[in-house]
Image (cartoon, rainbow over all chains, first blue to last red; front, top):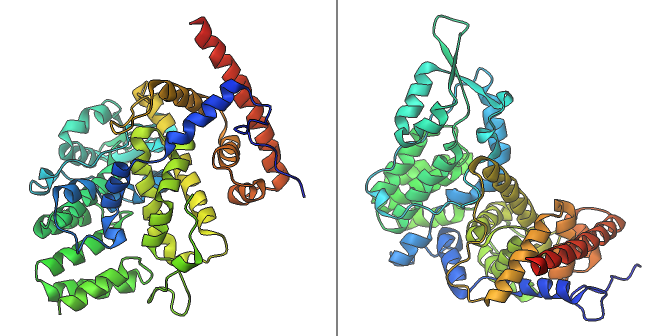
Length: 263
Length: 188
């Protein structure tokens, strides 16, 4: 069996003092206690603390989103499929909505500064351009007036195969983030005991992303919101559908408890 | 490093009837700092580590019912963290192309590193950023996380000899880059 080489941080290694110093600087890479608390706050629902936790400002700010990052690693792959699908005859998914006012009181989830978008939507190459109808573009830009201009800059009107003109447009920058953002706001609203807002946001997600990547999370939030609102029958009905659709969901046990408590 | 002890094994019901599985909370409590650290060392910038760390644990939470215990929990976590860090780096590279320079020097206000240490850490980041993904992973896991090469190879999913080759190449690249950057600093 080959013996592992002496590590560079070991004084017996051949590494230069300069390199050893650099490597030692990584000793501070771990999180601080505050950072761990913040992370735990974000993961409150998964750690099982949301239901029992008071609706403190910390939780409201910390428990960002079930959805915000659950798909970030999958965003590139999913978006590739997503946009590949747009080049076919599939209808393009609708765009995200604006925030619901009551949920928008909470701070906007922090988006990684270096990871604002997946790769494909901002690739300006023609191969990634998708064709959509004029009305869809209007709907998109209308839904996102603040963000319309960057995409509008790339819109090229081309003759369509039928009477209506078609528009070739780069995929919007915001789609995956918006799906995540909506559910992030819904999650925060739930944490802040604003179940009405949480439910409204899940409805909005349902309208905007009927085939979204985070339906499992959306439904879990919606069921919990319904239960908190005392709409036990609706919660139970929705949960019945949920457990059929997501039989192996990690949220299932918690939702089962919630439904049982609200009988 | 948060190795989950056998005593921390807890039975879950419903998901793994008749089997023993780790609770998500246990995995989180024992490995949060470790995942944070490995992400940082795999190129996730300080300002983004919390986001990516959350991403890792949400995936863990989601995939936990499927975790078969064929590998150690940490090996499994490494795999997820590596993929998340890789995705992060790809997205960050695209963001840099589109948005221009992204300020990578953002450091959380709570960090109290000395200026010198911050400078050294920033320099290490630059050096590691120049490694390709495969070499970086082996280098970080072996040199910084101090994991044995056999386990590193298992985590990366490559033959042991390949892992050694990557380590050798990474070491040479890191040593050369260090010398070059230090010399540049002295000239400046």
